[in-house]
Amino acid sequence: MRSVAQGMPIITIEWLHLGELVRCLLELSLRAAQCGLYLYCCHISRHNEAVRLLAQHRLVDSVE
Picture (tube, rainbow, N blue to C red):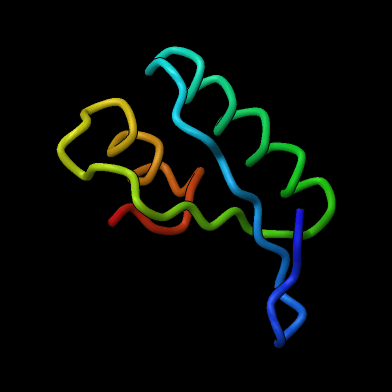
């Protein structure tokens, strides 16, 4: 994890197989929520149905 100038945490997720990606996002979003943080994910295809579902349920902040 690294921080930008504003002090917002950034979590970088490398390319994973879809099942691993979804599991990883779920785990990270739940852990972030426990710490009062909100998970922001970028560069994830909005055309992926599983990832769109995560965004729809507000488990990730952004799908680009």
